[in-house]
Amino acid sequence: MYTYEYPRPALSVDCVIFGLNDDELKVLLIERAHDPYAGYWAFPGGFVDMDETTEEAAKRELQEETGIQNMYMEQLYTFSDVNRDPRGRVVSVAYYALVKLSDFTNQVHASSDAKRAEWFQVNHLPPLAFDHAKIFEVAFNRLKGKVRYQPIGFELLPEKFTLSQLQKLYELILDKELDKRNFRKKILSMGLLVELPERQKGVSHRAAKLYKFDKIKYKELEAKGFSFEL
View 1 (cartoon, one colour):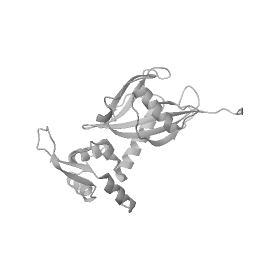
View 2: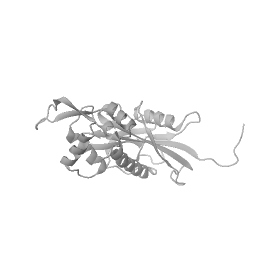
View 3: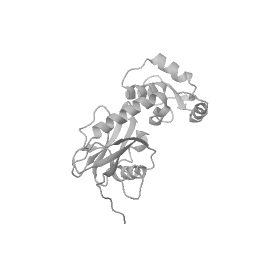
View 4: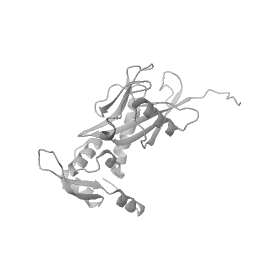
């Protein structure tokens, strides 16, 4: 068996999961049960086993610590600051995902080495363990940038939504107020929304029209060079 003559860093993964709930954009955190940083909140994650890829490790750790499984995630960034983990030299590959929070609220439960798993508003996060505040900043900035040129925001909405819900989503992510008339004109001009023959139910105000995102049409337009940009 070959033996390396130089020290090797440990490899870990961290998962940043964004979810939308009514008028709040949230992120999933776990409360650590063990040192280092016992009692602190952190992103779900852990060390990569010798027989798995980083993506496989991310999905396994997410399931072990929160109960969530079968989720599509994209690789975000590699964090390799020398002193990021007090246990030693640890390099972390971070992943992020966007989910409809209502689809996962009942599935989230702490297990493994996590005391609790909860959703927190992105603007009201508790102190985070390790360098997870930096990881969150990178993930949130990636979300802000990508939502402008890819229709990933629809992953956070229910299948049927109003234009007001759609605008509110973009305002939450971009952290700024958008002009209602210009936003609707821009999004409708793309031809990617299907107007449904139904309206909101159970609301105190005038029920708004419902729409859905046409994924098939978007793929067809994208293949022809269409650029989604808000």
